[in-house]
Image (tube, rainbow, N blue to C red; front, side, top):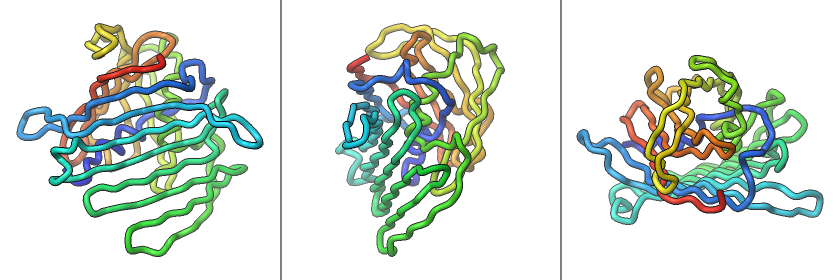
Length: 251
């Protein structure tokens, strides 16, 4: 189970430039995260994705928040309290600030990325390790994992054919990573509180050792103007699992 890597894997899967028609302030999506234990999908954690509007002295930003917390009965076995957040332009979803704070068992880490004129300024704090600061050049369309998770909802899948792909760049753990989104067609699934929904089925591939298999990492997005992530399935080196939508607000 090793840090339940599927939480991070699910968060870094998606990206594409676009407008924010599908993403507005005031959303809250809740998921039950399950892991395959001895052949049974066992619910271990709750994942939430939330958006809010934040005003600064210079502008109004969209605050994107993703959190993962193990259910209390699993805390003594392996406690997770992870938070990922990004501040983005509400029209383009271009990120300006990204924060990551993870507590997984006895391991902890904090990261802050500032996107500034094609440069990424990084501050990293790990348990029992001095603070580290660095800066490096990034490509114009590079995004953090939270922003990319929301950007996928702006892809116009209605104009794509099954098998068609899109490429993108994500920065994670202070490194740029290439990845692809492959459209696989439509499927009708049980979308929890949304009922039976026709969904766009999307396969994710990435240049990372955190994902395993071909067309084994999948997301189903409702085939409407919101493109709500209704179901996520993943395959990683330590096993397989899924995220099921359990509650929706502000859609």
